[in-house]
Image (cartoon, rainbow, N blue to C red; front, side, top):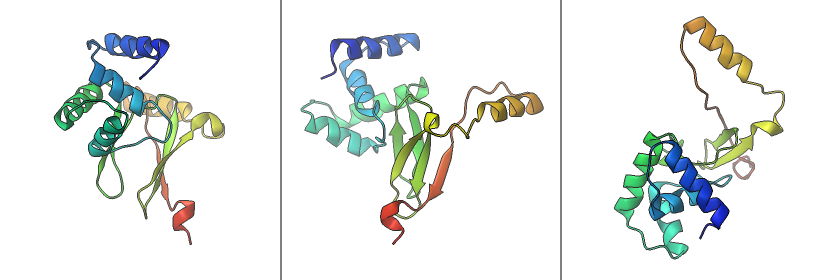
Length: 147
């Protein structure tokens, strides 16, 4: 169960986007709010059940949809076509294994030579778009699949 400070953080994040706080939303955000966690809805459901939470699979799906629509989590397809979710808020790049489908986070602060803000600004100026951010994915083979 999230500690009081973490609970207030989730409560504030939900309120900031106009959502009311519920235990399923808090628990889903808490589960996804970690580095290198990119579950499918079923994996998330199983993970919450293992933590002892009484939650239904339909509740997981419903809340994933609501949280994604409000920008609190990110939804993406892995190389095998599975829908996965990411709630980690630090700026990061996904490294995706094209062989096994593993997804790993690489923090942008660990890649100072990869400053994408100038590229984002230049793209906005050239296109007239009001760009708000970016998602970047590196694809290749993880260490376990290179052999």
